[in-house]
Image (cartoon, rainbow, N blue to C red; front, side, top):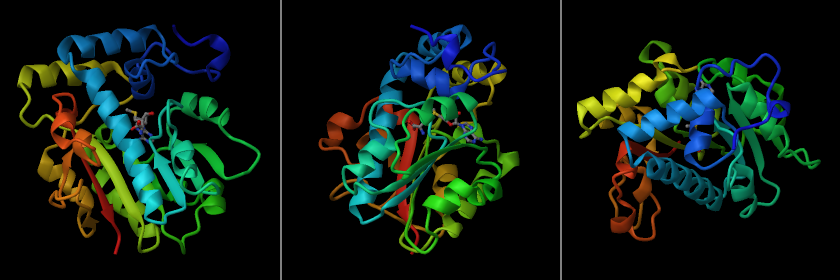
Length: 275
Ligand SMILES: C[S@@+](CC[C@H](N)C(=O)[O-])C[C@H]1O[C@@H](n2cnc3c(N)ncnc32)[C@H](O)[C@@H]1O
């Protein structure tokens, strides 16, 4: 079932697929248009395990948000937050700290519109429509200033978003700006699509779907993903695991062997602490 016109921001170009709506389709949501569905089906044709990838990513997002909250972090900025779905960040972290603050950030206006429905009267959750490639505009936004105390540790969540940022826009520099703006004891959690160990023709068919989308797709290698964590203390992904970038499914998994699926191996992931 596709979204209805009432839930669409005025002036939105629905003729081009967008990452948020393609992802919503993959997760079984209802907020997508024909162009998104066609794009999603092309991806499924090229990468049959892609829905597993999407769920591995979403599960990772929830597990690490909860884990960071359990380290005592009570404020979160979720950048590239996506359309509301099962287990939204504020729902997950409020189970640990009921008064936790969460700011959702996404550059897709449809995300802002739909996320507004999640806001309650407590004033502890905000949503802004902004582009992560402009850290100053996000860090200076009044919602961030109101809800994120720079003197307290923050959970910075950037799952499945940096692959939509080209090298020319300096994604490593952008991530570093967010991390440096937050207090010591803050955590960064991210996932990133990779083409490592994947058949080149499959990767190209996947990537090409985004040629006509609102954002292009950029796969990165393990070494390139590790650069996002430069200068930070990377956390072991599971008990007994080495502190390093790993596949999304296995991070915090109860059964690491079971979670190490083909779908999950499209995504590198890591959580690191600012000392
Ligand atoms: C695949 S979804 C991931 C959603 C969520 N983070 C998760 O992991 O479940 C990627 C999201 O990043 C957003 N996005 C892409 N480029 C962005 C940018 N430059 N600034 C902010 N958000 C962006 C898209 O609109 C989309 O909602």
